[in-house]
Length: 148
Image (cartoon, rainbow, N blue to C red):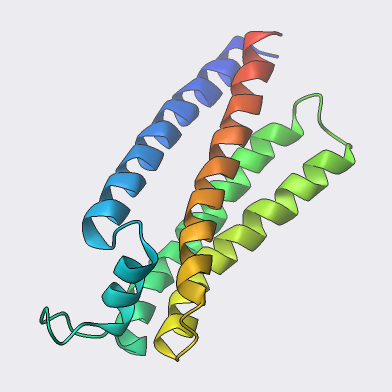
């Protein structure tokens, strides 16, 4: 693998780590990491003067995330295709998992505001699962450029 390619992957991974750290900080600050906090954020709480989210409000947040999550996952997975994992079924499973979990993370708020409160658990699960998948892919990439 060329040195310039390794360096670009390394920089991308560094920025990816910063993205993950900032995502965790923003999620904790804005929503919280508990079932009740997620419900309260999306459904609202009259006692604490927290308004419910509307479908239009969620859509304004979701639209840029759809593009960014797709692009981010595509770039990470594109780099991964050039490693020794190319052609393995585990790579295909990782691709499906990354995009599937990202879709759950993006669209679960719509189900929460429409009365499916169980999806607050799905929102939390998908957030952490997406971060775990991103970290795993990043680790695989780092391992591939450091051992070649």
